[in-house]
Image (tube, rainbow, N blue to C red; front, side, top):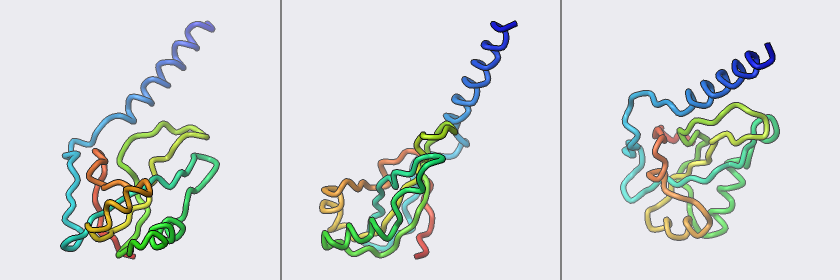
Length: 129
């Protein structure tokens, strides 16, 4: 009886973890047509943790970029497109995305930001703020 219950729990857990890895059939290459000329979208994890923290606010990271002399054209909270198991204390995949000038990309990278092109599951959206 105990063995059957342990096996059932293991199967449900494994199924849940594997379903988080499934795709939706769409291409994983981001469609980055939603920036202006000479602009790029960069991101950084907001460090949010399930059941514990909502992560770093957009304005806090925007200030970090501004202090480095990088003008932010637009900012948005979104998701990196990867699957994460639902568990308190686990990561969320939430990211802060900023539209900046291409010429500022090297400076942003020094601060730990990366181009969203590096995110295989990222789905580009219009930045509205």
